[in-house]
Length: 200
Image (cartoon, rainbow, N blue to C red; front, side, top):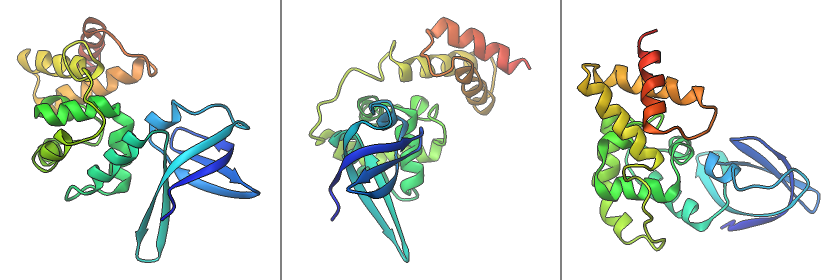
């Protein structure tokens, strides 16, 4: 199995990189969490890999850390979750944050991750909770109130308590998050922007 690649980062985008290994360019799909850890194009790089084989398709995925790769493997073991969805989930939450949300059974916070609906969140919890508890990387304190996921969950509960249905509240929160251009807002900032988005 292809375990890692060591070479030069030829090109990168938030979802894909190309690594030049002795003149051969390898294209790898990556989650946003990996993109944020990479250097500039032209820098030396060692990237962990996962080769997904399906019928006549070979697709290479890359990860900056072992915890990202292990969590990716766990995610694709869940029924109904393929590599593309797993890549999206890892792009929507940091690994330690995601571990905590699953371990805590926090459906509300999981559904604020783009691409994760209630049924998917419940499957993640049911199928991965015990496995996450045995995960080698220690759980951090992300996912509690004050963390990015905790703030999204608080905003979701606040909007639903104000009378918005869950679908409308989730849509407003996603729209609001886009306004912050990748920066993590406070609960007050997020709620204020989400209310504006919901009123459009």
